[in-house]
Length: 99
Image (cartoon, rainbow, N blue to C red; front, side, top):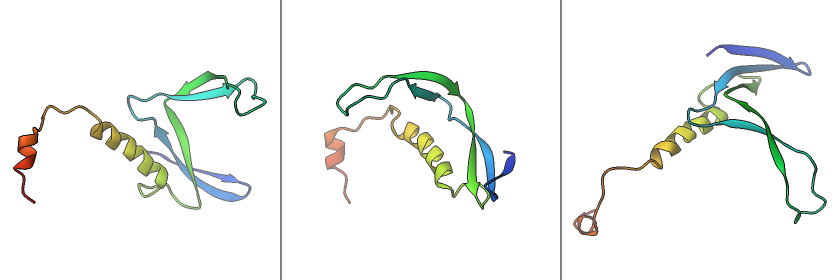
């Protein structure tokens, strides 16, 4: 993807545009009124949705080694790990396995 550059308070920023993983929706929420106590119920409203966003690093180019990029990889990995499988294993099959 296209690399972006900018500055913030004189410091260089390097970034790129990331897409939200397919099957997911990103939302921006707003709280109309803050509660007076921790026990009081909070009410938020969805104000916007988005499918891509700018991702910035300070002083280095974005790469696959960044924690943010790794987090997006985990989203895909999690989807795979938690998807249903067709194979089933019985208890007799487990007891015949030697380690």
